[in-house]
Length: 287
Image (cartoon, rainbow, N blue to C red; front, top):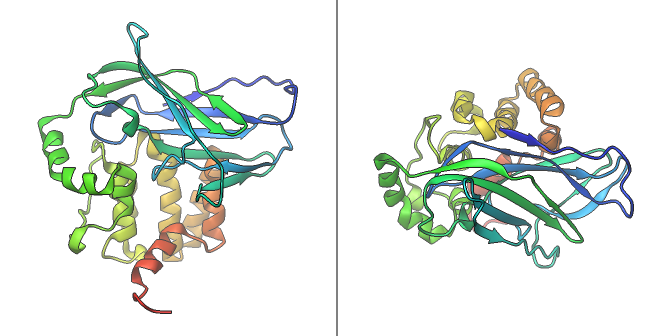
């Protein structure tokens, strides 16, 4: 589900700044699992280049994300978290820049902002993105927070020790499995952890990327659909399939231009999945 935000066509007064082009989200989320949404930002006027913007992602929010969560029926606010972005390369803030006319889509997880014991039900979610001195805010988006099923509760209990050690679902995804434990193969479309499982398998699975079946990505529907196309491009690049890579690149650049930066990196031979794989396979203690 995508909430495209209306923009004033007139040139805004003052110095150039940021605009929030869209907030993409699913309708339903399961409590205890990631709550992924995607924001797309751009400059608020054509021809403007934006520098030193904090880069939140599924791995961490770089202090740049704020959240408002309110009950849909009463409007009562149950979560209010302000962003605290300090953009500093010295402090390790991940950053990006926007070329003139470009936009950037960022998939983020806001589940860590939910208080323990929050009740299932219908809510409205507002996302704030701060890139000092700029700050943009989405319109409230309707979402449902569902209680986990018995099977999902069992899975949460099974993963609880790993999640506690990692500290968040993003860090859990970024860490190799304990003791070289095997990663599960196929992921079901309804799995609330499907994006994290698939990404973890792509980074740390036993088979080379060129041997991974792209059908693995079929489970990435809803809010994950644009990222699924970029990940397919990664797999086609690993296979040396230039034709299918070009197909995915065209889809991204025409339908999801906020992910064009990802395609640019793949085409430049700077695949992030490939880099992680290379680091994993590099002998420790080597030069």
